[in-house]
Image (cartoon, rainbow, N blue to C red; front, side, top):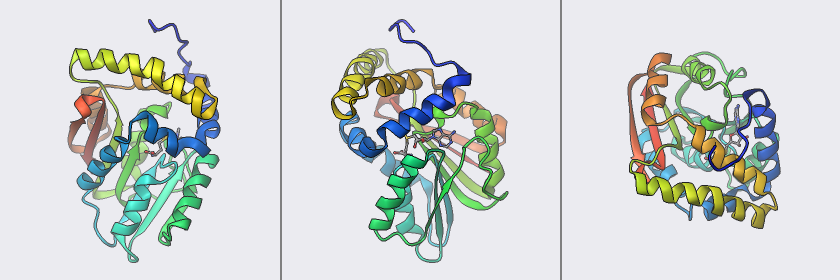
Length: 242
Ligand code: SAM
């Protein structure tokens, strides 16, 4: 990129992602609050509102990490429902499990799973799928979308919350500056790991923009796809149905 950072080649990406999240797991929640100045909580709340989650539903949170969404879904689906918190990274999933068990969430399962295959899960087994700030870390996003389509029940809904493209240029400039200077600085300060947060900025920049992601969802077979820009398109929430 013109910032002079090396782009991670696809073949190395999965190992790199594993290393990044293993390294930040313990401080992940604190970093999220600091880096987004707490706004990630609002983005997630919006996702929950658009999820239409109801009692008794079966919900899968993919790349769910420390379980922000799963925790809310656990309450919403009630004792007749079930939530699965899944992630490819054991360190992140462990933090999530401890946190949700401490919070008394008794209707949640914790499953190691790669979003590209979702291999542990049967076809058409979930009413609702979410992937929040996870898709950009996935190497083969089309494979991941196909797997999501596979495990979703007909009539079910997929929500993708992810960094996207700011809708106007000045915001884009400020945001670039922020991601490539403040983020690594905060990363270094809190986790002593600037490199992981440089990776974060890089992965955000490489992620497909709003329209591209919507098209990818449509070509996978998702119906009635739409998206909402949040915070001027810094983040977008995509929605699609099976
Ligand atoms: N969903 C949580 C949230 O919104 O706070 C965590 C997001 S965190 C930025 C990204 C997560 O994606 C990490 O926990 C990481 O381990 C996970 N991840 C990365 N690649 C993955 C893959 N191929 N399959 C499943 N999870 C993956």
